[in-house]
Length: 491
Image: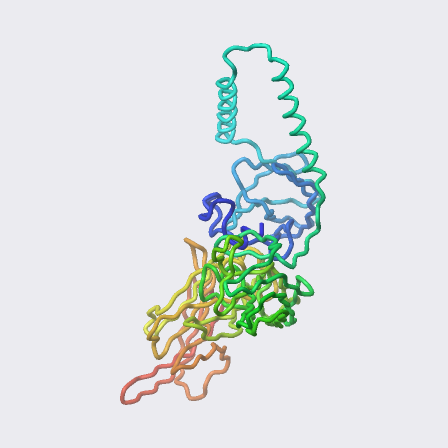
């Protein structure tokens, strides 16, 4: 599973064509990888607890304790052929919108849910064709004339069978060595599987990374982690160790959580502090040398070198006083290498079934879009269907910027369903005269204001009210400021 998470490839496919059409957009991670919650069942409404009793390739058994009629989403993709029974009686299942996971309605009571993957007509036809092809091959390979084997032929067959049996026994009883994790590396270009480098990793300047060490594989926001590299033939070259996600391979401007640069010596220790609002989940340390490239055992150049993953835990504790069922806020922002990096925090009061897309936009005063970037939250590593409820979910994204920005602009963020509606639209702040001003709610009306009353409605429901305006005129411009009040939650 880590290979798929790291490279984005699923087996031999890179286009996710294996997924059902109900999965939009494609997933890049799961609660199993991000939080070690393999058997996580979402309770969309009602109240229920679930326990996995048995899991096989084509069958699952769950124990349900439902205290209030609930809709459940199971951690298994819905495919044609899945059937469900509750206490022996068939129940309807369906793909959950967006995520494509199996969803069903559960009545009150303690009950046993059984899932079975049965044969569809297409699957049965394919299996029968495969069986027919196998039987035809056996028939074509049969000898045309059956003769009694001589003694030497029987002896040869017996020796082959004996050798094969010895091979099976050797594989079964071959001693298993518990190798250290200190030499595990991978890269995106040639060696995408996390593997042991028994002879270390040679760099083009002659330095060789023998091993690396840290105290723990799980860290919390705000904690410091010390990573020590053991290097032979170090040339004193400047080395940078950065904590990233696999998004840095697909998006050049993807933010880095923490990094440090220092001269590479025989024993080099990097001290990296996890930001207090760092997104939770798996991260990978990336090691780069200023003027040297990692090499494969054959001597060819490898891709950027990554060490084994770490897990950042989520900040705990529920938040209160959020008036909207779905919200976003800007925690921090910065300009780095031609991109505007935004540190956001999302909030939902109820579980989400869809994996929404997020759109970052920079608009000028006329509403023209100067820059736009659309992706999943966390570049796919913070999917909205796995967001916990009742707490802020940190998310770091970057908006690449073109040359020649307008003098004044507005920063907007949208959360939307692919091919569907916008579920959240928020203004994060404004850009004026080279400075950024975060959006601040203003609950007090100014005294120097011309009163004016107008209420805008939809379907007889009041949405917002105009309280008044201020008018300023200079020789070159007229500035009109309107003062509104939202009368209900507006997405």
